[in-house]
Image (cartoon, rainbow, N blue to C red; front, side):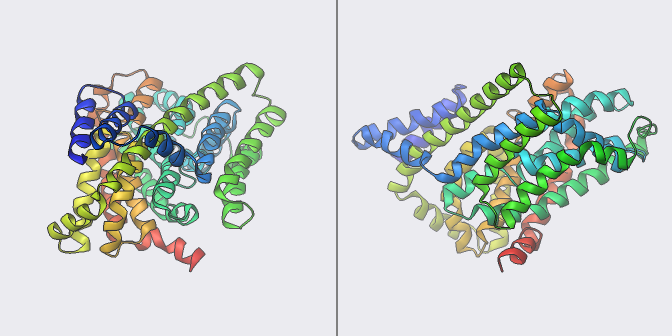
Length: 424
């Protein structure tokens, strides 16, 4: 049965069947082959969605979209430009810094790409940066949306593996700072070497006026993360707080949210949520059937025979996840693979939170690599460029993140330092 399911799923992928539908059809074939009642599908769909942390997914998606429509992201951009925009290459650095701030609320890389890219890609092009470079930078920096907490993929990992959402969130802080710092260093060197960004400070606000204009927007990440780690509310409750805060600021303070754009924002959020939940529902059935067939135990024995120690296992894992992320959507990859791979990783002595970060960073790379990189398509849509124009300028960014990934993999303290500080 497992062979039939996996082969049929890959065949559906090759035929360009949508990921969620391909997983669902493969699961149906597995149920039919095993002679089980069709009620199993309904039961497992319900069981896979009946999890409290999943409530955070639609709220964080909505919060990110409200920040974009309500003018919050625009003020974050102005503040980031006031901090680092004065130096040569500062506008490109402010793109990374804004994505980092925006990520501390939105939890989605695609939302980060559209919200920040719509402002900064045209601004960078206006200041003389090549358009492919600007779009590649935005797509790469938006990865921080799923690494810096809160993160929707981390919520999915926690739900799929019964891992603490809070521990995963705090484990993402160090890797997020590392990747942001590496990207900012690269674009600063690139700008100085090629002579770009000499006038980046021309139209930026001074620091204090920019802070006064954006302090309510900047308070949002502090409230969300401070509330979670201060024990005031859970990550799921934090997502609802983010939505309420974005609504109040967008409607009554900045007055950018009207009935028209609010209805469009709600519609876009519902569609995005439905796509993710459909993937989770079908992947839940698929995972149940694989578990019933004893695949996790067999996989653990097989990998234990192939890899002799933790370090070779992690290297093999990185290579496999990098290629998987290129072809399979992130949510589906996490929900299907995380329950299978985490027990194996724990056999090799890998901390669950550290493993979750490794998996999320790997699959985040898949968001910026062809042929199915969602960040790449979003950045191309904002920049109005064909995807093939971005490939050459994208390669250095992928190399930078890969170097960071190796450090995150083999120096677990990068992920676990803040976790040990908070949880002991």
